[in-house]
Length: 243
Image (cartoon, rainbow, N blue to C red):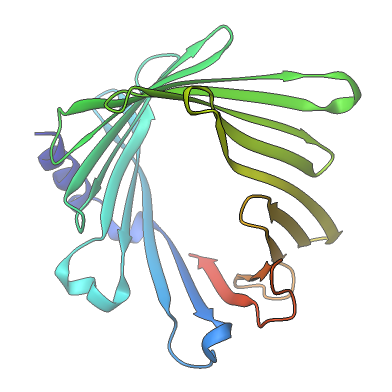
């Protein structure tokens, strides 16, 4: 039922009033210069379903445009302090629903997923952040994977463009996703960011330029393997624009 309502709402959108965003990216490491290795068009429109204000998003792969959208989603708020997002992945034939509620200490979320909705509860999580001395922002996000009965806690600390993050699995006594990052503004509209993937021993470098091209934003990224730093890095160049 939700999937049918989602499709009916999205198909009824006035195309001329939608916001179109497009992204083209090319794998420089494989030679570049040829057709993009990936591209994505996104149509965004704010609509009303009854008294509920909703943002509708449809993603298309231009190469298979006539076969239908890649995914579609509706997101918004119901009342005060309660948010939702319903998304249908047409290729994977999966539907996901996330419900969020504001609480005095942060946000509590419940994720549901499956072929259709309503479906099984898959994840329960919460998030909260506090400001510490010296302008440091500390955040914690505990979560429980319902089916696997496994809990984890994502921890992060950020200050002045620098950040540390990791996910801790107490019952398994392991840590995943450990990262250290730093973002530096070079000039107006230009920035460079460094992210160290500590467990993978890799360094991601990302340069974003929204000043040189008045019609779009250019992003160059590369991943350097610490085990072979002199080897050719995995690199990509992307351009995005919004109409």
